[in-house]
Length: 429
Ligand code: EPU
Image (cartoon, rainbow, N blue to C red; front, side, top):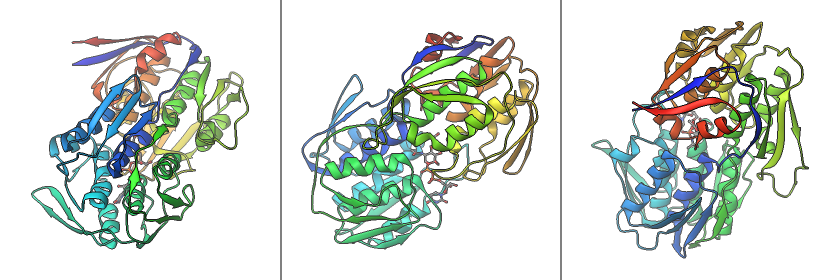
């Protein structure tokens, strides 16, 4: 078992580069299943456990995959089995992203049901309902979703609530369907735009990505292409908080600033100075630019935060910003509206001296003067980042166990923090 040890108190400084977006790379890799001919070359692929999982998933289906230094070359021409086994799906819920592409191209899929998750129930009913509306027959047997379809048919699908991977799954399925699909109340996350841009390069006809209505006109065939994954907005946001909590001054070299509106406005209200060092290009809204982050002055402001679908404040930044708020004098109220159980980090932060009260989906954070280092346990990916951030500011030593949660979504996190001056290391026990 590995742990991360942080000794708090160092001000971070210097430059850091964030990796490719996990939540873009996963659907993009799943989308290669749609390309009947040609190889797809994906660049800026982050080195993460979740990426390894989806690669193993596709390799198990018969995809030919070559990986080298941030690049993945995938050919799915020879896929001979349309299964996603429990052993892999249980470690990563995003495995469900193969369901739409498999049904659309092969007319069959056998994908394990993901099951429960530390941050909430996370059902996939909307993925299934949408595929059924497109003509797929879906049954659940022995813990597996068994899907069958002739060629899927375009449909008018209205999501009951906004779902990111649900929108991605149906957008991929619709790309090869017969006729036009409307996805209404679709998610608007930047990762959906990233996927749509890549699908268009593969030959898909998609309009309206980034809005609530996505219109997809199905085509007969898609072909491999070359595509560069956008930088990870949540990793960038996490480093912004690292600069704030350590009273540091850092430059994030490739910040996808336009995709971070909801986070940047809150961090500015808290009192961070977020200064773009080059102009942002309108034609490349997902590209990264260098951005400098530091405190505007010595006093930071408590405030209220409500997690919302994009462009609102992302649930994936809730734990990190909560950590920062624990050290800001005054009362902050955080409402988590996306996942019903995403406050597991609270109990660990309390062990470090934070004053937080949880009432259902609301956390009331009363700022304390200091946190004190303690042994803590990560409960999910973003919680683990929040705990390390707490360790950067805490007095003494914080030892975080269950590091595998962190490795699902942050590549070399402790190495990047160390390069910025943090006293941090990973140990094997
Ligand atoms: N939901 C349903 N039924 C469905 C689908 C979703 O009830 O069929 C509910 C969920 O239970 C949740 C809400 O809808 O309460 C929103 O869930 P969504 O489907 O949007 O989440 P997701 O697609 O499973 C993605 C990210 C998450 C991120 C959420 C919200 C990927 C691979 N995962 O999950 O990322 O928190 O959107 O933005 O894109 C992370 O990176 O740490 C992470 C958890």
